[in-house]
Length: 314
Image (cartoon, rainbow, N blue to C red; front, side, top):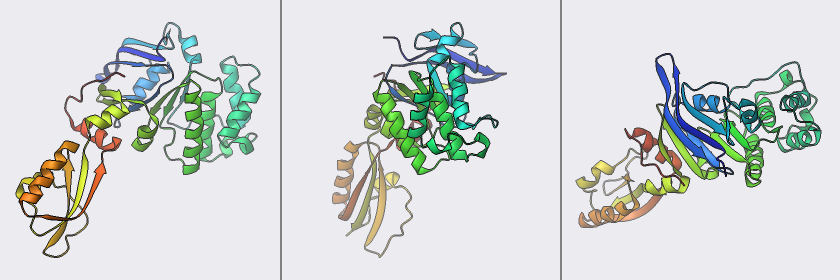
């Protein structure tokens, strides 16, 4: 089975600036894949190349086995992209916009599917409204509908929930998850890392135009297991050997015989040595809470590493 998206040593330059530096990536059919990175990491450049909006200076990109340059018509039919920016034609209604998009892809008899998409995205009552009369959140819903109107096997969502309300996030993710379960490949870029952690089975992290981490979400969380240990101590001060692990807290220490401290644990295995050091120092634990690592913690730590982490391809 051909990959949904295949990138081989993709390089993109803007003058002297190199936005992508030899990116290679294979996304399998049916995956829910996350593409994460800070601003300027190269995510938008990568999506533009996949969508055929920009051409790589070096390397190759295929969508469902179709080269985005030499076989661009088929490649674009295989792909639906929800852009980050709000782009719309102010002279058409919502339904006319979707019919026009369907016609662009050569889809006939699209009205039943258009009706379903409008209903699933909460746009049914806006079908005959002019695009310029819609709110920003409603316009973003239309962009999602446009990406889905030709039923592409591969769907790229570029910050689809940026600046939208909770209701749209909920209805959008319910619909997208069902599409993924039906076999559609989903590629998501987002700054809401809790969304990526919940939805994506595999994640690539970009930094300065390079992939610095590529693994199953569960693998990333396991490799960076640890978290924070919140303690209320009494009996004796915390030993100095644990001071390097202390993280700033907003809660003030109360009283002379007790204090609240938060310690950073790189691995869960670090917990026992910490507790042993506290016992040896005569500290009594009044309260203890362990906060688990989430994808945001992993992301920050990967971005702080100079060379990233070892690649795991699942």
